[in-house]
Amino acid sequence: MAERAKVYVIDDDEAMRDSLNFLLDSSGFDVRLFEHAQAFLDRLPTLSFGCVLSDVRMPGIDGIELLKRMKATGSSFPILVMTGHGDVPLAVEAMKLGAVDFLEKPFEDERLVAMIETAIREAEPAAKTESVTHDILVRIASLSPRERQVMDGLMSGLSNKLIAREYDISPRTIEVYRANVMTKMGANSLSELVRLAMRAGTLKD
Image (tube, rainbow, N blue to C red; front, top):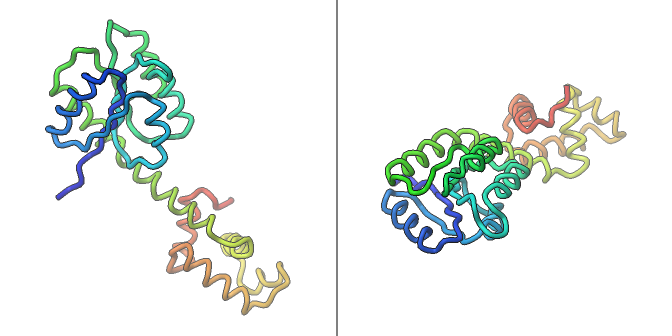
C-alpha cells in the first residue's frame, strides 16, 4: 500500500481545522493539524515532505510571515493559502512569496483536494532531489579532515602518490584513507565519488 501523502493544516480556527481534518482524511491524506504557525515551524525540521495548507490571517505569525520564513529555510514544501474577506492583495503577495496557489473561503471540497494533489505531484521531484543532496552532504560532513583532504585530492585528479607527497604521508596510508572515503560516501568507484561530489555542489572547477 502506497504511503499516504501528508498535508499540514495551519489555522487558528478550531472548527475549520476539524472540518479540514475530516475532509482531507476521508480523501486519503495523512493530516497533521497546527493551531498556529510557530508550532508548525518548530516541528518543520522533523517533518516529512507534504503540502502545507495555511490560513493567511492568523494571530502571531500570519500566512505571509510563514511563507517568508519557509522561503528563508529553502523549504521545498508546496504551500496553499486560504483567504477570506476577498483578500486578493494578500493572496497575490502570498503567490509572490512562493505560495503555489490560494483559495478564497468558502471553497469547494473537490477543488481543494485537486489543488493539494497537484501541488504535491509537482513539488515531489524537487523535494526528492533535495533530500538526496542533503544525504550526500551529511556523508561528506562525516569525513575526518584528512579524509576530506584525500577526497579533494582525488576530485582534483591526483594519484595516491601525489596526494601522499602533498601531505607528506605514505601512499599506503593514503590507500587506507581512500578506502575510508569510499565507504563513508557509499561510492563503489572513483567515477561514482565524482558524481556524488558534483551532486552535492562540492566539486570545484
